[in-house]
Amino acid sequence: MPPFVLDIRHAEDARDVVHQTVQALAEGGLVALPTETVYGLAASAINAEAVDRLLQAKGRPAGQPLTLALKSADDALDYVPRMTPLARRLARRCWPGPLTLVVDDEESESLVRQLPDSVQQAVAPSGTIGLRVPAHPMILDVLRMLTGPMVLTSANRSGEPDAVDADEIVRQLADDVTLILDDGPSHYGQPSSVVRVDGDRYEILREGVVTDATLQRLASFMVVLVCTGNTCRSPMAEALLRRRLAERVGCKIEELEDRSIVVESAGVAAGRGTPATTEAHDVIREMGLNLTEHSSQPLTEQLVRNADVVLAMTRAHRDAIVTHWPDAAERVHLLRHDGNDVADPIGGSREVYLDCAKQIDAELAAWAQEIELTERVGKSKS
Image (tube, rainbow, N blue to C red; front, top):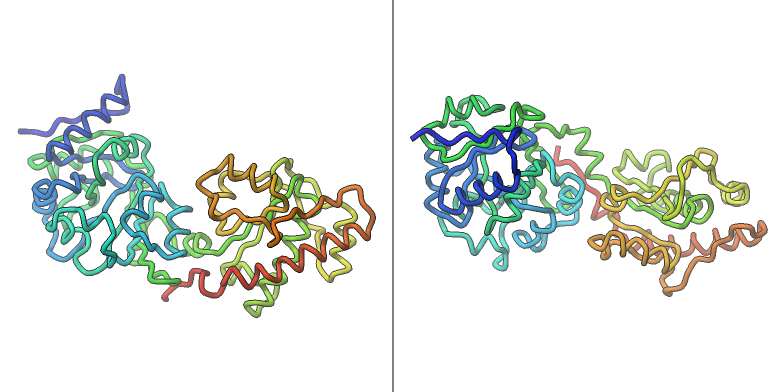
């Protein structure tokens, strides 16, 4: 019986498409669906017979693992509870998106242990498991409604070209697929990048959409310092922390990004493009640093999501960040270790600014030690 092809570009009700897809998967069917990279072939990961049919349709040699598709980066922690800081960083920054992370699968409390034995063997045959969160809104809706994750592979027979449209799926897999979701040509038209993360190192197993150069940036350790307007406290802190971290890793300040370390500052009520205050300029210059190129920026969702550590000048700043982005709470801290605020020097004298800068620098000296930077910066295995 030929598969049912559903053109989702002209669907009257997207929710109906999602429900049909979830039903097909729940009943043990194989579904060919669009992702942002190439079309994928999916089965419910809790249905051993469906996964076995997927393997037969794919014709994949034994021992080549299938990917587990999840609904979010947070969901990944149920399957890899002790995911390393580097793996968490890449998941947080890249998902949903065209990256498959291969991580260790050795934890007894992992939800992987609750999948059927044959499915565990299909996704984790050799002590590692590949995880991905596809960046297609309808597929994410399917994953949110489906009981358990999906097993996912490219919608082609082994050795055949990747399917980048529904016609290619019909040509290769018509006799094996229950449902095909047709969303036109794939956005990227090339597969996801596959990256093995082992501790604080990564290795590109397959370069796809995410290039090596992009991955190096994504693997960088990032600290964001936050005040109100991003014109005095946080710019001074940014300059001072860069010096502290450069001293810590033994490089020049301008070489930090080459060492995969990024330091930025922002304000919870900042506009864009305002220079640092004259007093902040003068004080930082006296301390041997420079703020002439500083330009203010507001704190954004992307900055918060990308940050490994967010250091807030006051409790009010931290509360505002955590209220707006509750998922980031464990990464947002007060700069002062005693729990008190760094007072705003705006409108104060040079001496007020200098005292503020010295207080910030003393706190940053401790943070530079606590961050354990040398163990947490991603490094390529190459």
